[in-house]
Image (cartoon, rainbow, N blue to C red):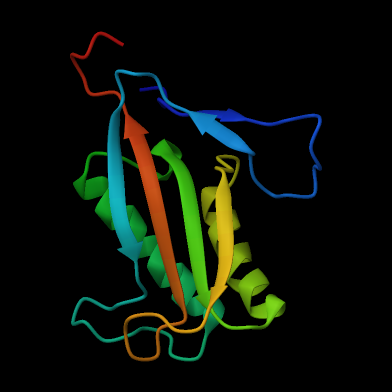
Length: 140
């Protein structure tokens, strides 16, 4: 099934950003608002302590699981916000590279933020997302 998401790139804005600048979904799309995907193991412990890339990988895996449970996939995501507990741009870049690579050609509009602290012990990365899908039988 084709994605409900249309990525919009602007030739009038810098091509340095590694994502589309905007995205749309048709009115008939069902929006899925995901809680921040955290780097938590199934037992609730924090994965990959001290490892920005490792935590980003686990957060992406957990995001994939939540999307699957909602009837969606990474290609249905319309936007993301990646939160990284650090004041060093290199740490943000490390986490972002993992997220960017996971999305591949589906380079959704994204915001990357450095924050002071996240909710779980030893947590360094969290990924918020919104997805859009066209449900079977919706006529689209």
